[in-house]
Image 1: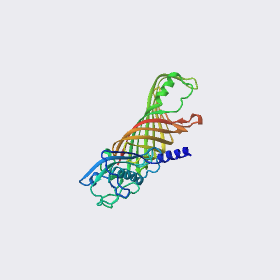
Image 2: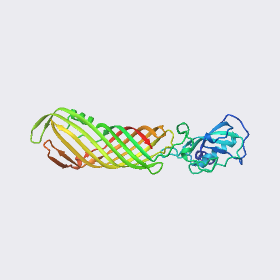
Image 3: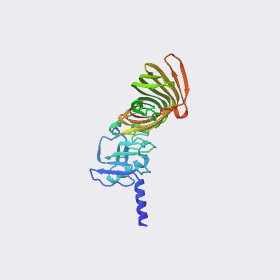
Image 4: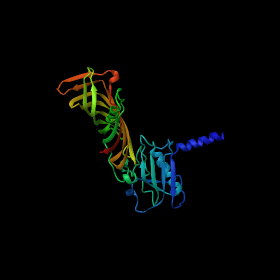
Length: 359
């Protein structure tokens, strides 16, 4: 039985918010019925008050009872224990998709002369009603610490831009010599960039458009090619490859209330086009194709300002070409349907650094 009680105690403590309180001045503990006023901004404070400590209501990693109302009540209990009759919220961290699911606050413990002039705070889902009037204080009006001091409008649009080192994952064909294998290996590594624009239907989800382009080029010198009829050609070969994508895109992101940065997931579906401006022993050959393409990505952007963030992102992009169109030096064209084992694999990995703009 004692082990069962121990487990129950551990489980209860794990489900409750993590609380840390420090007090610089000792005062008599308040009664349970005494009122504690909650201030959202220093501008709401009376002309005379004293700070006697701080309290922080956090997340243990297993906390489940951590809506804003519960968190505020926990902070008020800590205030009463310390003899404080007021709280000033100095930081408010919101639940996030990829981080904690809890509201977390840091508050100063204050003593003020008279609490009867203030309305008992009412807690909405994500906000605290003002102590001085009956208007609800919006999320953006609450103080979030040094980064968020002051008001910040909720963004309705997102713009993301990335530059990446990219690596195509297709295997090389058989029958190549070591020089040709090394050439193809280098050709499958290139630079890519993309830009995405989203309309946010709420704080965390948005829909928009994505454009992405990959480029790679190279020259293979003094190579010999033998055709099926036995004719031998010798000279230089070159490739100038562009793989472009445009399509509808979806984003799932953390809101602008996350303090350190924002994680995001992206998924785009659209048209992927392939173009290779190649030369074979001085003779130009243009190879093109297109098909359905997809891009999936995840990243984390660190906040520089409330509306500008920078950070890494990883994308997995590509598609498969089932036919190719060849345009020869004399202007003639030919479309060739590829056998299944000869499909052109366009899939690649992009290791990107990018910027995120909210407006």
